[in-house]
Amino acid sequence: MNRVFREDLETIIGEDIPWEKLKGRTVLITGASGMIGIYMLNILTMLNDKRDYGIRVLAMLRNASKLPRKIRARKDVEIVIRDVTEAIELPGDVHYVIHAASPASPLIMQNQPVETIAANTLGTFNTLRLAKEKGAEGYLFISSREVYGQPEEGQEFFDEDTYGFVDQLNPRSCYSEGKKAAETMCVCYHEEYGLNTKIARLAHTYGPGMSIYDGRVQADFLKNVFYKEDIVLKSEGTAVRTYTYIADAVAGLYRILLGTEDMVYNIGNEDGKVSIRELAEIMVDIYPERGLKLVFDIPEGGTKGTAPYTLGILSSGKLRKTGWSPKYSVKEGFKRTLEYLEIEEEEKHE
Image (cartoon, rainbow, N blue to C red; front, side):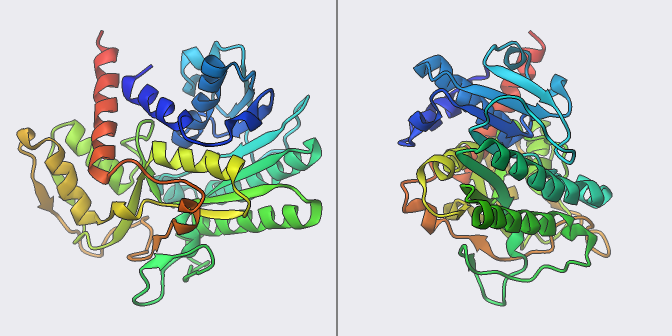
């Protein structure tokens, strides 16, 4: 196992989260091969290895080959080949459902808006229905900062009960409107059937397991630094984002699932608030010995397929009151991500 990945997992299970609730339980994870899904899955297998928890993991995905071979060979992991947009029937108990299956790449949102909204709406309905049928103890929906939309003028933070504007007639809203509808389903299943649903709204999350080819700005910057290329900005880079390292995010997700009372929580590292330009400058500075530069090449008419939000960052004050706090700065997190990528590259050539 990659050293960076292993260190992250060990840090997460060292958190004061009521992990014992998972003993002897069956946990379904959709999108199990994605960046979030693979972390969530490996936390469970590490709990089995280090604490003998006896967790049965159902890893749902469309292509089993995307899971590492060592995971596929484990007896405590059962692979379920299924598209979440189709009805889900599984034998035996399911005590917890973690719905992490969702397109996150702007390229997919731009070119496949139908598939994007279906994964978040139909996928959520199907997993909620399964959780109800199984009498699940907990259900976690992984939502997004994008449900908040564009903030009001001068608004800096989004709390869990403040919202901005989303244009539902913009095809790019397939992601944000799909997430919003899914959240409403979670509330409805809780209200009508008493299902213990939890909603986690993630800010921009990055780290080991993310694709450097998915079209998101942080992925493009990582790719540049990894291949020792100058970073090219296609805009002035004034949009402000909060970037949360994956290990911090996953610790927050498990805390929400297992150790909180309310339904909805933001997960975002306010200390990771940077503009796109500042992020590029940080990335260039991670390895100053490479002599990389920041270059501007702004096309006429702007860029297509990106989220239209320029302000509005997540406030994680509510989650912090439960004991969660991020451990990694933007620079530290992206440096760890690059270290992970370089270890993976070295292992390919061994």
